[in-house]
Image (tube, rainbow, N blue to C red; front, top):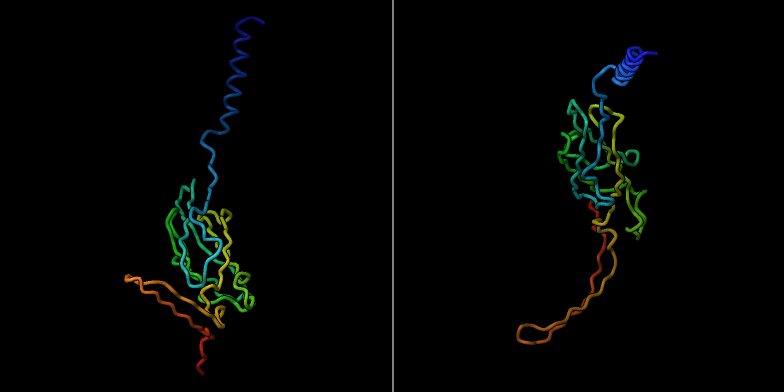
Length: 178
């Protein structure tokens, strides 16, 4: 093989490799990525509000985020200040004022709670989402503090006069009115 033929073959192979590597030109489409940048807390008390936010990247249409809640069948999962948001914007979640009776362990508020799943989904591609679990606990429910309590207070005032007081309280359940 002479030099001209060898150069022609190498040029043809190089050009063929270049065209094959191009694959039709243009950049490959980047996958949409969604992340909860401010997820819900792992636990929250009834009636409390928490911020939520999620960021969507590589979304050419800037569709934003769709928010949903899921919990016990028929239960109030709480409320969101908005069902959708722009990428990176913050919305609020407010826990319900009560949780189902099945989720309460009498005398054990530490074992009581309702699971709520908060999901952020790409508005452009519903197969892209992030979910986070949260437990709504009834700590603020005064029915768990019902019962007798004793207290003792003692100290001294600015003139070094000593004082003390003792007493008892019976915290009952609120009266029900018909």
